[in-house]
Image (cartoon, rainbow, N blue to C red; front, top):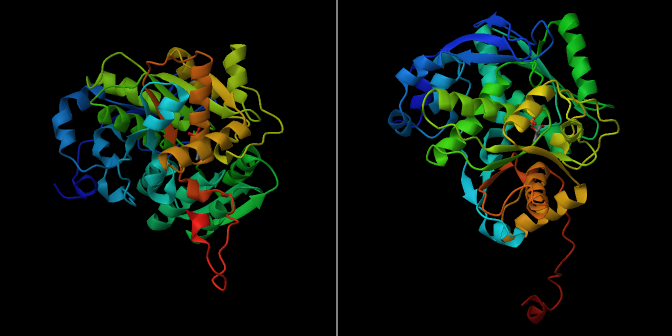
Length: 414
Ligand SMILES: Cc1ncc(COP(=O)(O)O)c(C=O)c1O
């Protein structure tokens, strides 16, 4: 096995068509698409019987540990179009101290911080950019809360594709800087991500760039789906009891739900599904409100704000898909406060040495809350998603200083 076999060996691909997630209308594969005619996301479909015949667990186990090992379940046809920055399998780690403190059972975290550009957005954008390269797209545009823009900028620059990126004014500074450094034209906008999305949409008609927004582009889901494929493989082709997912646009939650269905169809897992829990911030919780109201679509959340910038998404085009997965899985949607997020972040860093991003910390806060109110049981195996490195966010300052001109009081340091 060579480290880059997955990037160089041609393997059969099985995409048959795309399908409107709302109406079921079919669209041809191998063409540039955005939303369906109904204005809803397009979902990529595969010949799963073909995949079943072509792929075994044993063959997979011999492949290099990166997301391209699942090639038969991915949309990129030719290896020449793969634009990789090294999308290594992310670790699934136990959190024994946090589990014990919360009074829970088996608690695991999938640490997505290890991916290129420091977040799980790499999974979706490596797929979107590779497909854009295959289609000869020359200019991609995107609204972003930061991490997705950074991933788009990195992969598109590597592929020689121009990018224009719009961020809300108060996007973390590091995100703006990394996006600019990685070759994109980036602009701050005095609005939220859906306002930025409108600018992208307007530019499609005026300057002809490609709209790479979450779920308006069909292949980001396919990349995010690999979280579910990896997770099941890491658990010995089992799924956990519960997944806590920090939900903005919801691509990862929808993608993992799709991954489990495909894995069952190819005979790799059984009918058991994890309960999918959509975690949001109290001051931006459109999915939680819609879940509690029992409705299919979520209305816009006005005056959204939270320190977990990645989940500050007032309105999501895939709202019905998030809600469908949550309900079908017998899961739920839950909101946590910024104070609870900060406390969870500090606790994980102090106890486990794990520097979560605020969105990841939100999942731990939600886990504790769900255990306390009995929505999950103490015997359930739960997986949290830490979606980005905590190093991308403002961290508390350190005030203690030593003056080398003075006598150091080591007793005070002991
Ligand atoms: C760190 C982080 N967590 C969570 C999310 C939400 O991801 P999704 O769009 O899949 O809901 C984002 C999106 O920006 C993010 O950057």
